[in-house]
Image (cartoon, rainbow, N blue to C red):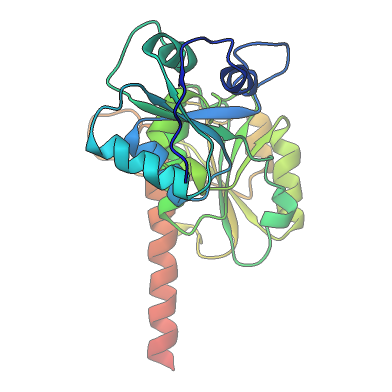
Length: 280
């Protein structure tokens, strides 16, 4: 474990150039990496064994927590660098300074193969044209909290690897398999071929979510924050369900709807397991 002695003071340093190229900040290639910034996210990235390209610490280190994190990162074998303020916040991509003192450049994993994921007794959560990156991140976090095999977003959704989405995922982005698809109806047809029931959600559907069978292998599909699911996606769904509401709100936030649907599936499965134990 060798503590870095050089303090990088220019964005032309090879380590900074490589990081910025991966992030899509320079060059003509698209982003092959994403940022995890802040002590908690970087700690979780290390703990989750994320594919970390390099870690950059603002010099001088803020205190004992950053010192300990640097030691952990070095012990884990990651390339660590000390950088000056100007370089650090240039990499962070903000027009202002924050209290963040460490950032990790994490390689983006390949998009999950849905035909491989959709095997056995699984549940998948899919979002069509989810526009707010914070909603995308919270949906990843919500899926990670339940028995969800994969989260899928359409390519016209917000980037799940942008800073707002990564921060909103609160580290679930490092664990949850993700797939990005351009043709959601075709994706759903492939899931059907793998024996998954396609459950669409709509505020205007007639079947309450608790009356639908969510305990079997299924794909739960959530629509755009403003207009819901497209007609082409609705046609592929085996069943459209609603989350009954009794107050004055017209609709639920898409992340709340996703959480309720996954909770309802977990509730139904727990009830089924209790019934089997009782009958046995």
